[in-house]
Length: 256
Image 1 (cartoon, one colour):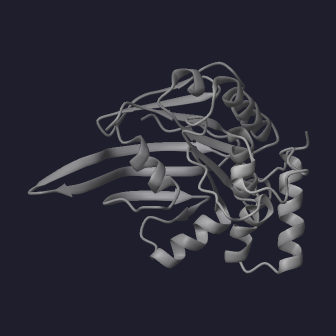
Image 2: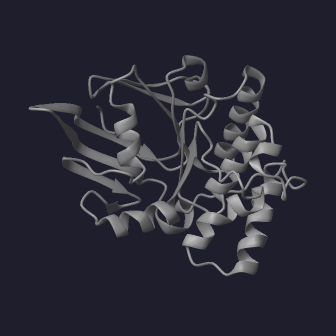
């Protein structure tokens, strides 16, 4: 199966520089009269073409960190740099543009429009990016063919299996050629065999040069990644390489 390479970093910035860099990242949420510290001074770097799993129990801060890395939220204090750009204090409109152009999202619940075909679901990011209709359809069709759904272009989500719906979601995440692919519990709604197939697909995407970060609470899923960052109580508890693959040819990471 031909898998699209979405990495921009080879052209846009040096592979020796981190794609993601956080500096003393804090996130505080008010809860009644109290303040909840969801993140407490997280400093880390993730290089282009790394395959990283972020793990942690409920309340560890992994979803909060994912939301900030995905430009869905902003830190209370600290800095977040994506591809060399400080995006910590950008406006909502600026963050929306970065999400559309630089980040591909894959969610546990797929988030597909139920009445739209697979082709139209994959086209959506291109609509928001202002791409013309003929180009949208061509790129969406190519993305679906690359995840082996070229014969399901006109099928609606209700006509697809869970694994096929997740493949549509992955095609949608890749269609805008983002710098970063974020997957939040991507096998959570799938049976074991289908989950393995989806994880094999992520492995192929990584092998083609894509930067993949997945959030999971399952050790078996995290084991597919080459680096596992574990959070607890809003801090990095451990940051290890699991030996499944070589380290990217790039600079040293900060110690967390």
